[in-house]
Length: 424
Image (cartoon, rainbow, N blue to C red; front, side):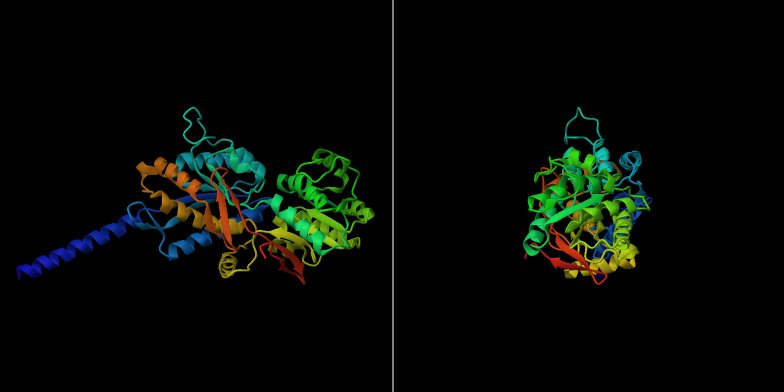
């Protein structure tokens, strides 16, 4: 009888500890807070990134959650996804509030490159520098794509592709596969830093490097190096650029039509890209080749101007070409978003957070918050490789930047089709 009583007591103690552990786990979570443009011309980017982030977190939690430093499995929790509207002051305010009033271990945002540049500037530049009063809050971005931004702070990290490499290889491949295309011109939206900067400093120069001849307004300073002749190009070709919110592209299209180039580049985000493409179609401008901006390789472009976009070629870091990418694409679609170059990175970032948390052995208590953030930052900086949706992603621990795989997609019969994978 005594032995039975002892066994019962032992069983009750085990049950108690299991219950206590589960109850404790229920009170803890790995908290993240995101922000991006959810209003204005680029609102779809924030909407899609939020849908991707929340969907990936749901998948992580369904698979068991995240292991903390004491071995406890806890859920990951998106405690909010705020609208920064591609405004610097708004994004900085959200960052400061996240760092000071929430127990999020990492902030995940934001959309526009200029906003990221300003936001990263309020972070501590060098980790451990006691003379620097900048915020000590890890930031993991999925969308702002201007090269080199993560170098601003040791607390800033990005999972974005390299557009310099993407367009360098794209134009070299186009030159090889389309020898009948010899000349080019194009335009961009001047009030969006990503599109205008990429067009005037990277796209035009990489097309020249590949051997295509610029036939737009004369710019003698143009050359094959990144940024070569950028200022002169901006001044000379201003009449064939537009604004993101424009609704009339008649003058710009007419200018481009007169230049009669074999290849036309429309380097803008979906809304104004569709406006320009529709006007080109209306004026019967039929170049041998159309090339677009990375951010426009999206469902939004097809929704806005499927027929006018027919044939456009764009390098992109996402396409449903793997089982994992297909699965994620379907899940995010059901959540009311879609995956593209940017939002697919938000999905990947959720898994990157899981890896960093488990490597950092976080405790997830109110008293450990600042140390958890530091440990998380250090763990994130140490990650040099991860599995991306379309292939392996490598990370540079010194710069906080990623090297991501990409493919070339073209609108064929109203759908995006992968026409080339540089990886062979």
